[in-house]
Length: 558
Figure 1: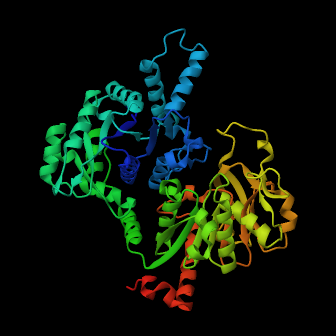
Figure 2: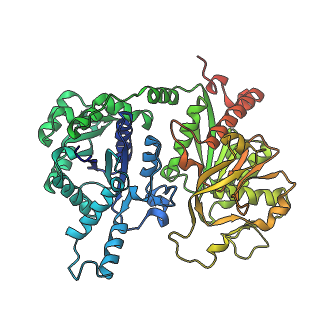
Figure 3: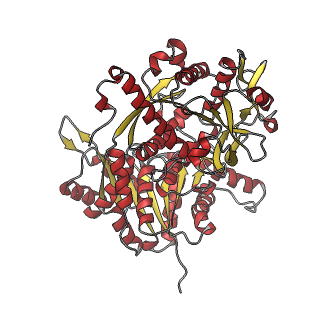
């Protein structure tokens, strides 16, 4: 019996960035999974940083943290959500990691005095990283490899050369190149233009890569004449020119790709034989996302509200939770600095729930604390994540326990009441990379808590990304108050969840629940948070219909 071969799908991008290579790759991945194949994915990032952990969210967007503590690109979040599969450090490769490994080996003398060069040493290490998941798990049928950046970027060239070599080393049916490109619609001319795609493919062919299929992002669907034109100039059969139009939700993309025959053509080229994908449950999910009965307004009060990618997993978690509650979640983005300057009532008077996300740095913290006080006293549903939980502890200490100068040691070292303090084993550390509590940690829930009701289990595991914790010196003070310590580490040393006992739904968590939410399986805390928001919206509209306009704007009938 011949040895099983893992197939490779290489996804590149051209013309402009932000076309959605990650979503396109994940969409193809879930289609192949629905056909019964074991699929894994890799993101190759060309930046020289070892990982995005110390990068500014305004430059990079969200840092997605894995169970093993790896800080990775936000596309790993798309992979996990679409495939419903937990990734590892082997699923994200950066130029920084590659060069660090090669230089370390050179210093150890592993190259026996040879001149270390991009080819073959860097490209060989890239190929080794791409092959690693299949080495770890021989049962993997397909690995989808997304190359970050666009064709022509100098940073991406070693990765492109590496995948070119990989294709040459195997049989034609062992790998396939997919190229994502843009077909812009010029409104003044009333035409779609194929020239950018032609030039992008030309640049790819100049380095020795001929894409087998083209995924064309466009505002309108490509007709057959455009597909023939693109195919003619790019040496691709028209049936391999896939129209990728804008859709109502990213979870509709797999359905669009299947309609265009992407998964079928890929399977034929790779000689992957299996049945048609079962799309029924995915279609039902998309239908529920697009056709909700209820509607709620959730405010996200944070520091990076002008860059939505910084909260990508939170946004997706609300879509998942809305779907399970038959509700559309309208997100209201509120700058915490605006709250501080103009007051919480101006921004939060007509919301159905408030979320304070994680973050670093002092800027905007006082506005977050004021927002939390507002929703706690008004009995509006609240979810605080990481720094959001810490701000909830500070707010409660100040306004319910009388500690007016309570704050976090992260922002002020000289504090009388540091209710949030540095982890003991982090004191004195100055290296910013890899010094936090990162990855999955267990917790034990109080059975008499809303968190336990949400999870329906006593023991949980969630992903963390922080250095500061609830200060245990203040536990005794909080005992007997309305602030409940609803979740602790198994040894009881660390506070993982707090709840306001006299509130309909007020939960703060030290971890990041958004990182484990899935479109087919919303995170329990997000799900119950939105359920509480839906209930609150009904009460608010009933008590003051004029405040929300027509009641049917809150609840669709039929």
